Length: 240
Image 1 (tube, rainbow, N blue to C red):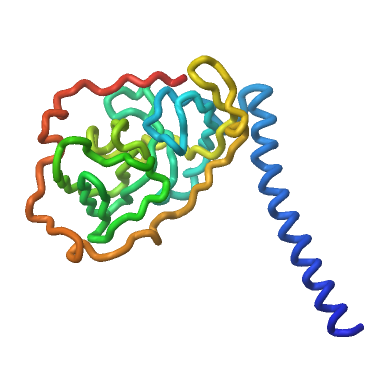
Image 2: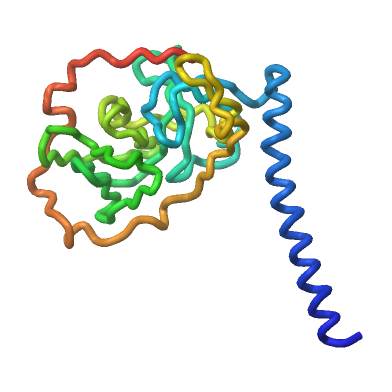
């Protein structure tokens, strides 16, 4: 058999394998959607997003599928979108993104997040969303202790998160958001482009960039929530 024929067979085999892998991944979430459309499924939770605090990743009216077994044998990774219990009321559940891991030191300015002196590049952020609107150059420092995580909403101007209620204990993180089952607008119209849509998540730890010393100094820090938000009551977010 000639080398050219062997090469063609090899390329065809690789293409077929890749196509099968893509088809398998696609059928996995479609199969999950199909099962949950018929009723509850053990190991998964289905919830409706009540706000746009995670826009544009998750929109108000998105019905999301949460894998409750995601962290039974592993830990949350930077960039994961997770479901967790409210620190003020365990009857309430929130959905935010993991930003800080145990041991991290985090500096939050009005535009950027720095982790261990390196800027975090955040492609998932809602464009035009600064961290603290009309507040000025606020700089808040946070330390993430063992078994804790620092969580933020993607829509920073409209998110109540770890900037307000502190770090979240690992035991209160319930699972990872994996798929949008379907989505409805406020007037109950379907968003077909968001039906059975998997979340494209990745580990964002490799997006930590340049050293903090080259961008700003940390001398002028302020106490967390020192600008009048400390005494505001926690937002009540219903499960559905």
